[in-house]
Amino acid sequence: MAIQNNFSDKKELQIFVVEDDLWYGELLVHHITLNPDNKVKKFESAAQLLEALSSSTPDVITLDYSLPDMKGDELLKKVRSISADISVIVISGQEDIATALNLLREGAYDYFVKNDQTRERVWNAINKIRESVALKQEVQHLREQIGHQYEIQHLLIGNCEVMQKVYALIVRAAATTINVSITGETGTGKELAAKAIHFNSQRSRKPFVAVNMSSIPRELIESELFGHEKGAFTGAVSSRMGKFEEANGGTLFLDEIADLDVSLQVKLLRVLQEREVVRVGGNAVISVDVRIIVATHKILSDEVQSGNFARIFFIAYWDFLY
Image 1 (spheres, rainbow, N blue to C red):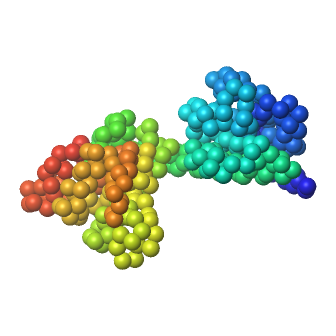
Image 2 (tube, one colour):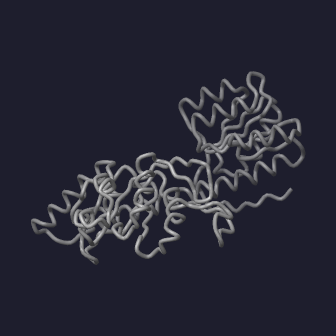
Image 3 (cartoon, rainbow, N blue to C red):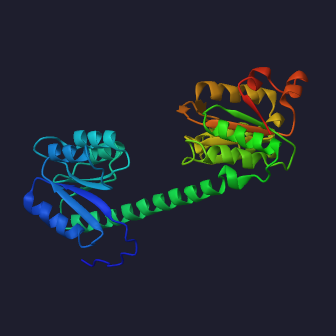
């Protein structure tokens, strides 16, 4: 068996090995620690593992399915309830496809049967997990960098009284979870203000998704926002999530909201009230947690008076004037 010694990523990976067969456990630990950046702790029972998880969270757990005090499927559920971020590799002495499928459905990273290739398969799986952890860290780092770009004091130029009021409103909005409406002429920086609110809020580590409502054909807006299932309409060759699902946990910025058709405003309002979407052509209800920031160059109160904008939709917002 050939092992590549290419450890370019020096980030330590915390690994718990759970195995009641002492000889096999030591063999697995020895093999995993051939990479010095793999820091391994070994446990012989479910009880020992759960006690350790009360004080520390590893990146990876290799889990013997048949432990003396708990079966692997039950222990996997307990581990997942403690942290969904732990990658759990289940190792079993018996090949059982039904058990393997059930474990994978319950969130196991992979399932291996004990044989001569198991150590190499575990080794390869851990290397893939290492790459995934590094990628997540890079994404988080980039999000933090983006967030710094939108720190309020670096974002908008001007120290006059009007701009100070704008800064104060952004700070107030960022400190809340309320939906926000931004009004201003084209080119005045409405999206910058929206990003400042998002990246200075508790949702800053989650996605910021921007949609220009005026640039999407009317017949495609519902699909764009809520997603669609395969075959929902001509050209829907595969299922696709909408912007609400993309922005889950974060902020959805709807620019030029006044251009949205009144019938679609009602559907959008329902999503805001119920916090759930149904894809076009589908029946499944998908829960979403999204903060909405809308923007327009029009005066929404005037649009309401003229019948172009639904009053009930308008009053759902705190009017953030910019």
